[in-house]
Amino acid sequence: MLQKLLENNKIWAARKIERDPDFFRRLSRQQTPRFLWIGCSDSRVPANEIVGMDPGEIFVHRNVANQVHPVDLNCSSVLQFAIHGLKTSEIILCGHYGCSGVRAALEGNATGLSEHWLAPIQSIIDSNKSDLDSCQGEEERRDRLCELNVAQQVLNLAESPVIRAAWRAGQKVNIHGWIYGLKDGLIRDLDISLFGPNR
Image: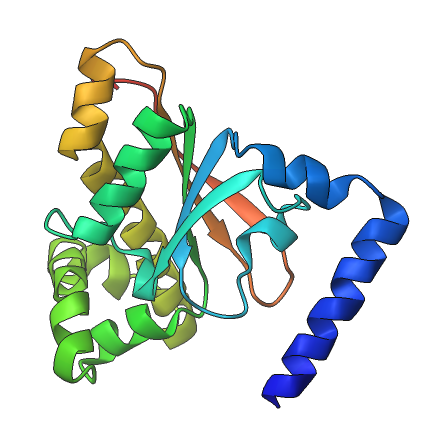
């Protein structure tokens, strides 16, 4: 199976060169993505592909259920590098419907480290109980929690010391909350955007 991946890579690279002979030379010279994508690790949500962009156009950070934990050094390092090193100005926090991590938190069946990682989603459930209880059926309830999770992670990003410092310095950094539909392949703008410290 691993050999098949290597073969697929050769085919992909050859197609890229066939369409654009200078593609890899151009790509290797610099990385100047305008966008930072923070999304779920789910293999069905490939950031570049679903927005029709090539490698090098989006800087990507992914984890289970697209969480932004204040003590997550990995996420903080990505933010720091994107904003201060790459001068990225647009951050997209993108969740997706049908998220297994959100579902595990909702159903209370996460175990081990994933239980710890997903614990903040329980606070979202508790503080949005009436909203979630008004949903028609379990699928609608899970989808609504996916949306609420995106909204909370956008707020968590806005409280990040890296983002706060960039805003204080007058750097343009905008945060947007989106959600992707596995069933139709479409991204929905949740109309949750922050454009600075005063929001």
